[in-house]
Image 1 (cartoon, one colour):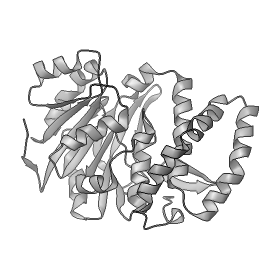
Image 2: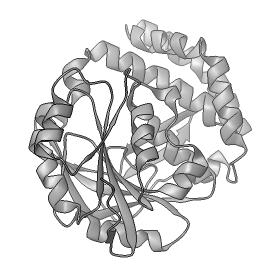
Image 3: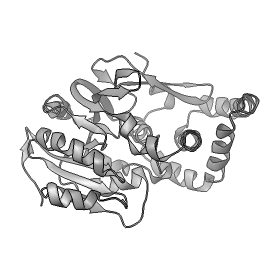
Image 4: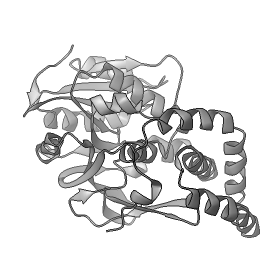
Length: 310
């Protein structure tokens, strides 16, 4: 069933990527539906082996389901859901995210500016040591590496919009090519997409009045992958991000000088996951440079112009 009802000025689709998230969907879909204001809701299922699909069909028949026959990873799964979306604005919510009922109200008006590609939500992140507010990112290039960190909770520019709690303009999403499958199975794909957008001249913003709860400890990555496996993928994708996106000569030179030093330091401190991540990225250089060639046609700004420091 396709919903064409507008939310304010815009038609909206909400896409939830799912992999064996039956329990999370049962908990959080009612809140998504309550906050949707009649928007299209899509669950993109990445070849789940639990009863996710049967549960949705039985309890939430108004939801559109996109099913992947083989598991693809986060980027590809998201792309399959967005492809089915009919809305001008696509909101991405992870299955471990529970939006406040009015979260769209502050989010959507930012898209009145046609240069805005994406707007991120304030995540009230429920973690072991309590609740932490997240959502706005800072970034800089340092010694040839892209350093990103948590920023102050204030409205304005953000280095990236989370793929688990943010809104995206679909026309620009299509122009950029969506999330890059290079980063499957997970991590760095939303940073990469936001960086590509910003380098192409678009804006990524943060809206602290758009609030969602994020229950990280219940997410599938934490419960399905070992810490070392996650760490190795994160390192691999960090190198892939740099080799795909960096173009300023100073950044590239610094990266070439500091990478051997960083790898040696990793060995000395026993961080072999970084070394393995580097090797896994290195053997994928042809695929990385094919992706680089594609996005390079979009570049309008330099790496030095893209830092977010305040």
